[in-house]
Image (cartoon, rainbow, N blue to C red; front, side, top):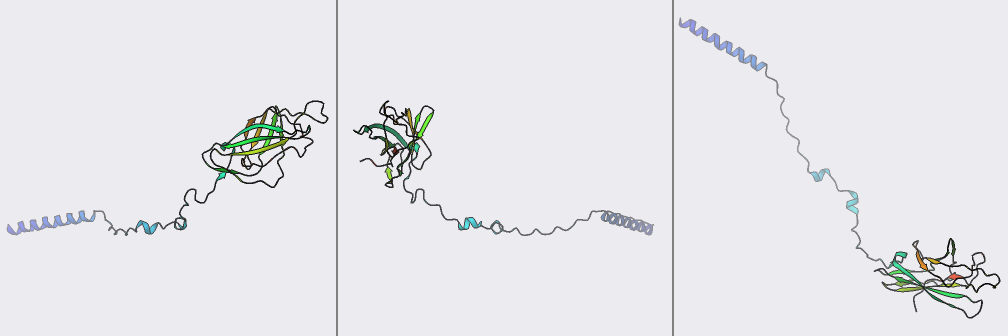
Length: 209
């Protein structure tokens, strides 16, 4: 009887071993995990931009800059009464004052463009051919003068005279494209659009005396 019991136990152990071996054979194979590659520092992967390496520091604001150019937005224009020459056919002179109403100093040089308006008609006066133009500096509140030479209309009966009835004057400062409109009446010139004369011109900007 003892020999039979030992044989039964041995057979049970052998069967258990076969069962465990069969379970082991059906387990999924697991691949070994490779070690992670070392992460390179960010600075090594992102080199500095050449533009950032060679860029010069910004210049201080206003460094080396002089007074800016006067524009129409900086100025206020007014017309004063002209002085007519004593001779019956002498020219008249009209003075236009330009005042700097901005808070910054600006400069002007040369003759402005002056266009006379009469209803739907317009007449751009010729600029002076004088080479005596000088740079005029206008501090805030400062003024400059522009003289307009023209031949006044003497009334009917004067041979060869036609009247240009001025209702306003449009002035463009030298070197600018902006415009100033000035009300001007009472000093109507002779219409010299088709027969210009040296006595009709716009002089360069000058500093007040």
